[in-house]
Image (cartoon, rainbow, N blue to C red; front, side, top):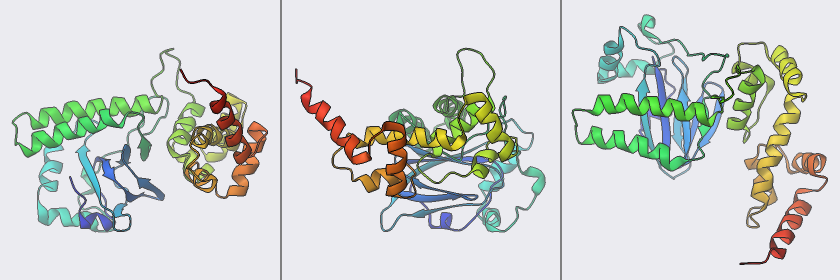
Length: 287
């Protein structure tokens, strides 16, 4: 489904909406969080949170989306009818939603886990297949469209929880630090504040930070920097990527800070680390 111009206007919705980027690029804002959508990126818009979606320059993007109730509601048909009525749909662009009794509550999973607002999937083809199957059924006006949509929604939620590391085979309870790590893994590429991380838990940011250190032995900043350097190491293997771009992609606010953190965790500057990796690769004999 192609982008619509009205998405550039801040709006509110009653339920959750998943927006998946199939191709191209777009700039998404949800609440106070901004993100550059590319292929494989999912935006999760919670109920009653202002959001916008705009083109990035002159380039277009192909976005697929679906609305869904996370919990079965008695007034589910009301929301469907509301979204299907063009005149009523305009009311979403006000400062407040009319009929507030129909606004859904934001879901908190066992252990305090909340869905991230943005997520990058390791297997974009799998997620793309889910959305395209729904789009195909909708376009063909298939009678099983709604059943397929519900099935895909459940599969998508499972994929989100898997990508975030929510499922634990050990059966141990989810720790506060696990929830914070999930947020960091999904948002390392941009500026992260303690307030941002605190919002993904049910605790005060300062208290959540203390719990994180108690459970992991590291401060939140130490963990963020270590994770970013782990991502940067992979990017350094590509000699065509400038150091400045790697710093930006990994969420560092400056190249100097990137270099400082890189030396802290590896003992080498980014440039020296790249040379070291490429030298090792050159020495590996080709089969």
